[in-house]
Image (cartoon, rainbow, N blue to C red; front, side):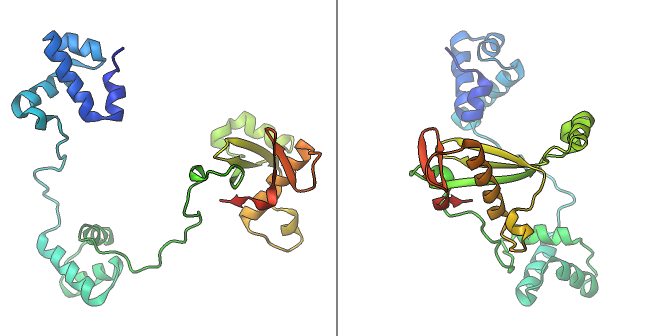
Amino acid sequence: MQVSYQRLHNMNPIQARRMIIETYQRCASISATAHQIGTSRQVVRKWIRRYEAEGEKGLMDRSRRPHISPRKTPSKIERLVRKLRSKTGYGRRRLAWILRRDYNICISEDTVRHILRRLGVKSKGKPRRKFYPAHWAWEVKQPFSLAQVDTKHILDFGALGSKRWDHLRKHHLPIYQWTFFLPNTNATRSCWDPDLLSEGQKEGKRPTPVRSSVERAQGRWRDSKKPSTAPGTLCWQGYPWDVRGITVV
């Protein structure tokens, strides 16, 4: 069974174009080729012309950069921005102000930012804090060693619509959802609560939001499963495991 052109194009565009050429060489008909691989005659005609003109090289992607860019910033201004940046170390806002004050060049802050990006100038600001561990959850081999907990506010008028949104408010239903997920085993548990604060936050201990979510998810899980094992141990799909030994991301 032959794979459709669109499906193969999503996986490997070059191989999908070769399939057009091979099918056309067998049947020698643009309409029949388009019908067999599930695409239009315009697409078939386009790649046949390129293949006949350039050979295998014609099946490669071409640059979509315009030949003429009338609003492109002149190279002289780009060199000036580079010079001022290396001299002062200022950011886009101050550089745009200096250009306007000293050189009578009026360009926006965003234009300066794009120039610095094209020149490969990196920001001197502090790098963003990494909230996730170095390894991803699906790379962990040991089961029940890494868990992901998400908190979501589900009282969304745009997503629920007026009828469901009014039903949640009228009956005072829970509006916060906690999802406890173990990626390497696909074990998922969800719980709902009308209050975002945990018991520790209400008492003034102020735990982190992630820890609050873990308290909620683990507490509701223990209550719903009613395990017969020791306290703090859960049983999911026949595997007992200790919630206190899980790394949360």
